[in-house]
Length: 247
Image (cartoon, rainbow, N blue to C red; front, top):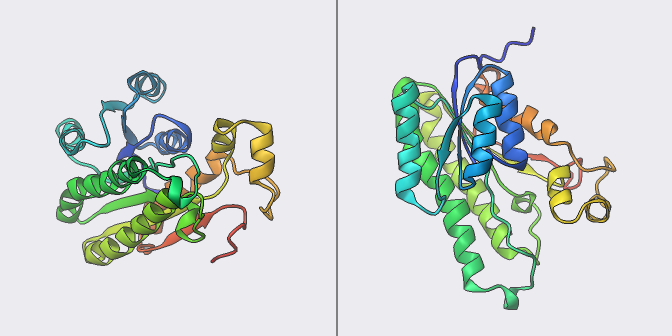
């Protein structure tokens, strides 16, 4: 058996009630981790709690108080957070520079970059004190290949990547790893944008010839969250069927 050392670990997922975040929550639970999910969608949270026995943490990613309250709730319930997965990147509708309103930039900065930072800031002191922790930040593949029609998301993706690398250096001596994962086209995203035609268009330049399955991303997250990845930190892993070819 390929033991990952996740049984009994306490995992908190920011954005774990939908899509790729939900796939990650399911995969971590399947490996024996205790799962807490923070999400703004209270109904989806109820479904996740019923399915996985997860600790449901309804909250607004724009609220520092609610983020800190969610982390405090996990600490009260379980004594701490061993694994943080930030799985809630924000992607406004595509548009050229002159059509992107300030509100789109502000939302991406607040609900993506700042929310990730706030979760990291809340959980890492406890991880450092215990001498163990895993942080995985999902960000867009635009961190490596910026999209001129998705400027707010592309800019935030690069910022999250730099945040990941800089904080990895700070916490590496304390047994805490911090990594970033940049997913390309996955089935749930293509379906959300219009199903078959949208998926066909989005995979046109993918050497693998298909969109990824959410479970394929979840497997990578599980590995990075595990004891098997103790020497992997400050890394940026692209999972996109070869589209960016390691750029």
